[in-house]
Length: 348
Image: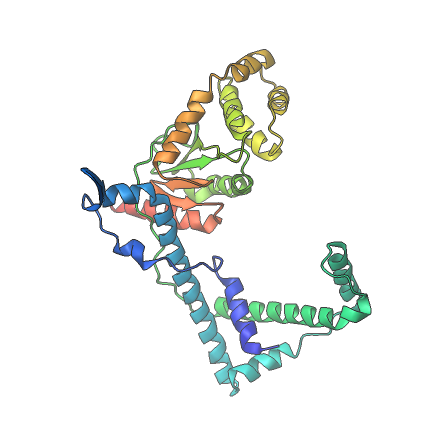
């Protein structure tokens, strides 16, 4: 068990984002504007057209580059704090960490047995318990050592005067139409346009974060949320689910249906949608007529077209005053961007 490796592992766990591949420098070096990047006979493809076709991916690369820098900064801070403590104790870093790890107790027999049974049930191990017990003990001790070092680093950060001066990543602004069902005041300084898919598991995973964000007292009256449909090709039930939400909206219960669809996903067959309408005490006949006629299909298609034109190829995608946040991001990703937007508005 290498103590230094445990420190690096603990530091990585503390990062705000998963490890990402660094963004390609080619993206930054791309020509911009109306400069031609290709000619097909008399036809010209400009750099602007090229970037527009992949701007969602380019934005993601910018976010990945920032996340990599942010994690590297966190690693450096953590390592320096631990090295300073090792120096105070007049020990080399590895000896300092080894002494800490030595306090990790031997795992109890019940704990080893429980891990073995879980691994056996999932098909990860076929050997008898006695044959793999030593490996289980080593695994559990390393896991506990990792947790111990991680907790130590967290405590050091809490005790130390660490000031993060790296500004938050600000994706480039895009012109995003805030058209669709909304929550929050129309005059809010921050508008979040969400492109989502009722059959997408990541979209369902993002919903609690969105609700937590909208409930934050410090943003009361300052955020407007607009929902737009972007059913992906691999989710055949999503378009009709989107129609169902708009049909419910005709009866004043768009958001109630929206919440129910995400809670029930992936049970989104037409029979399910009709059942949800009854649970919400909608006029069943009116809802069924709306759903069966396909009258809301055009609305869903218009939302999807807007997402495609913005270069959105995955859901959920959130535009905070036109700045993109991709995927089921953590609450901190939203608050950092919202705070920056509110500060920018305050300066005007």
